[in-house]
Image (cartoon, rainbow, N blue to C red):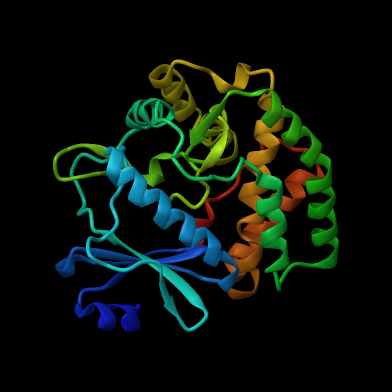
Length: 286
């Protein structure tokens, strides 16, 4: 972060860490910037994709956060890759689940970008995470690999028969910001792709079951106008989301005992086919 800031000619005295999961995200409020660093070189292509999407979002005035102007991106530092964004200061009126519903309706109404965007494939994403998972036991690795093999043909069938839409891929209130004008915008486009629009309703619904917030799912259903749990493909969507929620932590196991313990709890609930066992968000443990 300091090396990137130095290259941009901005101070770091007020820098603070916002998030430390698969990306290290730093705010530099006095400079009006956010620096987002992928924590493994294997995510380099993803950062390039995110930058390309963000440039297009700006061109069409999509409800999304903006890249920092006049910065050549992505930025390479050693073997890591980063992007730099316009800082959105905290707002007394934080985004709500209702805001998420309306933002998703706007997002799903966007045309497809004029460049190739990958098709929704949570299985391939999970497999990439497993490659980078130094702290994963052989038993858990084999189980998650088998889980990928089980879900792969179901995901392929769902993609084939569904209407293709641009989807955020990780749509929850934590990925919304309210800019100074009051407009609600999305951030974090790591998982943005083309696929069934229902995918974007699954995050809150699965979170309602796993994190104990059923009210959030009901409010999103009302705001968006669709109950994802009544969808014919709900089981596949739920299992795909849970695979993402487990595999996302695999590269972090060796660096955090708290994450490793939560990962073990999640694995037990999947082993035991327990769909209502409560989990703790990984972001709360970092």
